Image (cartoon, rainbow, N blue to C red; front, side):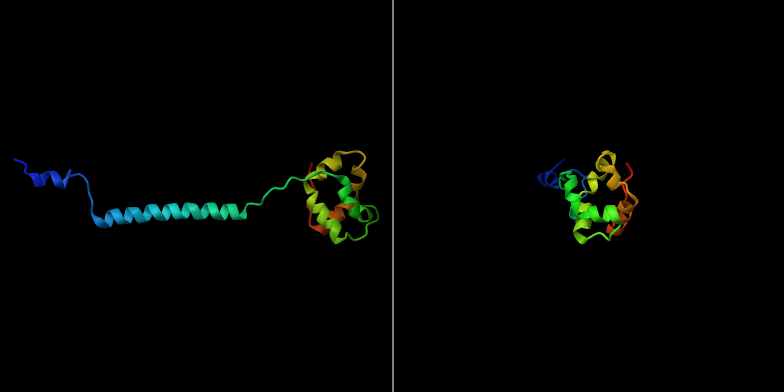
Length: 119
């Protein structure tokens, strides 16, 4: 016959050993913390993509370097880096390709650390 104390113990299949429950909770907390840390690291390293307005006149500081082989100015290099997403469009434009595709331009890109685009 069952007594009132038997009902308080609950089912026999539940294992409520303190060390097992605590370790499981620690593992769950550690996994959550690790996931949160990974998200933070990924977001911290992600570069925010800024919209670039493709405007070839922004490269006017590079014109002397593109046409005569002069060393590019710091301003030229900065503008090239800003306009990097636009370079393929400039290369495909018949009015601009002679400047952007010139041997001097490739030297300028290299000097500024901008990869020559493969369009």
